[in-house]
Length: 327
Image (cartoon, rainbow, N blue to C red; front, side, top):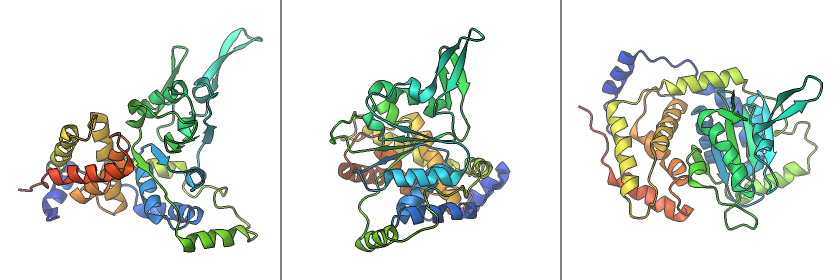
């Protein structure tokens, strides 16, 4: 990219930035996920990127391609609290956030926590829940808190929603509204596996495995994840890189095929995912490659376009903005 690395490192040194965790800490988790979902190393790298950036992840694909397997393997590998919502049309908002129950003994209302009170919430088939129930996650995802009966309850700083959904043309689905989509950091599709990976999957299914990779214990304690996310937050983005991001955001708002351009919240998420990519690459500073490589998963979840069209539009947006200039 022709970056002046000396200037970027100089900015970093002047800011006194120190990275307190190294990318190698993710290696056991990476192995766990690759064992659970064979032949999808590129998807798994994006999942780890979203995790390091303290974001929320939407997995969209046809039924049976491993969305739930991947989400469950990630959650169990992280440690901490894990909960799951199987989203159906009769699921209520209180089934997600919690509810107040009157205690007959002490004549007081007691709050019963819902599944959002965890580090990882797997919202399986989110778009099968009604819009009213989907909206129960808005506050939790944006602010990591919920308000029930006028009282605010704080969630874990590492709270992460891993949602799966089937394509919107599948029977019995409710399209996620723009406000909901904008709270997800990335949208990923797994796709069909290669023939060799399917063959190995069938072989694994006939073997007496002592340990189920999806159900095995944690390989990354919750405290380590918090340290990783702090390190990502400290990754430096020099002024030319920040200006580049702003110009790209402006291009999304002017593109003829985009009805709703990138929001300021979406821009902040894009920066955080770019920082996460830099950290996973062993760098303490963001370069344009980080921004470009995270563009599609970040933008595709919020521009309201079909996947094939979204790829073309994202490429056009990237080509519309000149690369940063360093002086």
